[in-house]
Image (cartoon, rainbow, N blue to C red; front, side, top):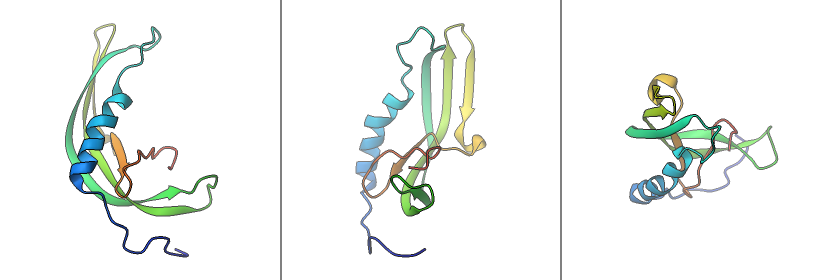
Length: 115
């Protein structure tokens, strides 16, 4: 680590994080209205919320990043496909959270992209 950008950063209260989760997560998992999309519906059961630190890439840079407090949400997604097939995914077993929020400002973090 080279420098501290924010001393004693304040985390959002979990009640705010929970409200953001309820607002933002459904949009991320709502199947697109697209005939090519095979998913008809998705049911989500959240099982865990974990507060941790993660390196997040700085804008326009892959070589530097910020150590950021994040809320990672895990659970089970049951997807029903148009052909009747049902598939279940447990995020804990996959090792990848279903949804991630920055614990300081509440922004959505895409861990695959790194920001």
